Image 1: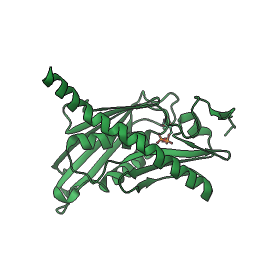
Image 2: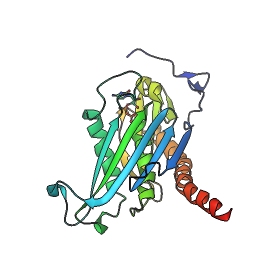
Image 3: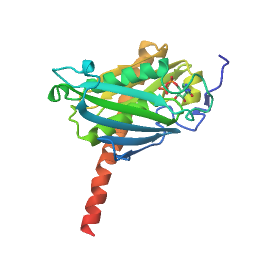
Image 4: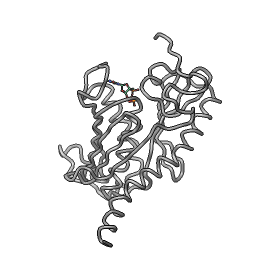
Length: 243
Ligand code: CDP
């Protein structure tokens, strides 16, 4: 691929510092029909997540008599991408992202409590600008928490990568396309357990360490936003009650 200068005078093309997240805002429970839902705007990404269940696992052969099964469907809306590469809806990439997202949540949901059932997670990308799997996981995490399904922790995800010798946090699409490495990670913040680690490109041991440090540090801010989103509807209700 042609080279593109991603760092100019120590700043990124969108003006961010190397360890700076894009602007993130999260709304809990926008979809009333769902057991739990959330909407996230992460930079130019706009993503909805909805959770249904625990409900009877259908078709029946997908059920596990000992625990709940987690199913996940990540899709990009046909209008979500500026430049079309690959068809929207279910394709190889969507199947991969659905799989890794499902694995993140299998690790935190208390599945043993709901034998025979399925917990269905839908992640729908309405507008995309790089890092949608990480933003989708962060959003689905809030949707799950809003659903009341018991979890050991509330995961978040973000990616870090490398431009030349410089490690950067939270790559947008143009950075993703032209960087030397991109590494999305999902973390359970309580014990820093890693439940997703993918890598496109290469990082030295040192760069990997820097990237993980940035991801862990930014997690504090992401977790705070997730919790605020969950708290807000209750605070609004309390205000109405007090009036
Ligand atoms: O979104 P994420 O970074 O997790 O996945 P990716 O496969 O590395 O894709 C990077 C970006 O390319 C996406 O966020 C979209 O902005 C864009 N993309 C697209 O426009 N159309 C596709 N069919 C796939 C990706």
